[in-house]
Image (cartoon, rainbow, N blue to C red; front, top):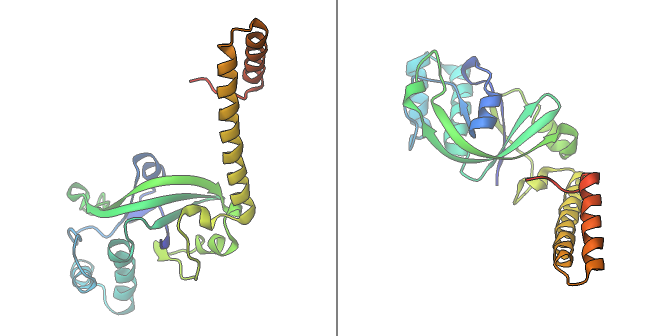
Length: 210
């Protein structure tokens, strides 16, 4: 799993809320066509033709577009910094939206995203905190960290707190099952105690209404 950071302003349009609500990310650079199965050399040719890029400018923009289209892979991790928060998602395949391939919209190069979690910046590992501050539209994490899931980029304390919460949630669910069984007891005293405990938990906010 490779880690990328991205900005949420493709073609100059702020799209963070749309990214989060509609489950996708995209970059700008319209009017170079569908880049599905297009290699780096062809992307270079199209960028030079559409934007008259050359030299360092061509190299930089080529790197950005190629990273999104060819370097990023399905299952990789994408991070978007949002002030003091970071949104973490797992990306899908590249796809092309022809109706947005124009200089006004410029939102045609896309990838689907399954958003995993939004965390405080300080809850990430220190090197990842620095990484998401990168100013490029898209950049790849160059460190040696190897992760199998997004939890691997969380700080050790945050990860332990997450595990503890999941453990307590599991125990709480088991406790509710026990109380439910007690409510079905033939002993009226046991039923009353179970009902009283459930009411207490409800009052304390320990149970969520469906």
